[in-house]
Image 1 (spheres, rainbow, N blue to C red):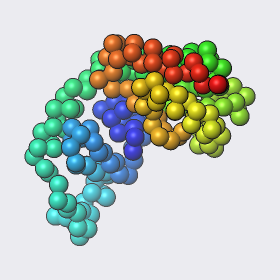
Image 2 (image 1 turned 90 degrees about the horizontal axis):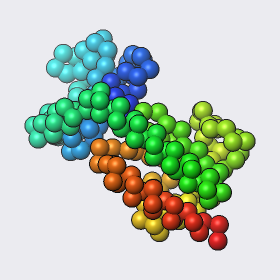
Image 3 (image 1 turned 30 degrees about the horizontal axis):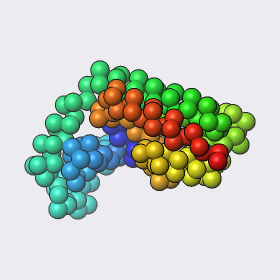
Length: 192
């Protein structure tokens, strides 16, 4: 459910005009505190208690602290913020692409909104993957080398080759400038 609020306040369903049977949200909906939310079509939701016979409850259901934190987080997520974050994500992906090219590392970083994917290797002949099967051809060996090279320069990527890069409000221009410098330093010795 990585796309929850990454593509806009309507998530992927809002971006792609999809009407799912059920929708689940976590993390942002609680401002980072432990809570989740589920919603869906009326005919499905009416089956849940107290209207229906399907029991639905939880220890943290309706937690006032998490709901207040979630409301505060959602109030920060305006259309302008999403435009800024999307532009910053494209910038970070472009920087990574250029740094990898400079270091002779075959890589692409496809972007959708505030999400950037990572693909390493040349199994697709320079083409960016567009589906799950193509994404599975990424070079885990190359990713491991990039991961450790960047970690030694102070840049922590996700531990797995199939994760996304997440750009958020904390990634200011200054942070991105530091990231750019550290990525260049980290990739310098990758082929040694």
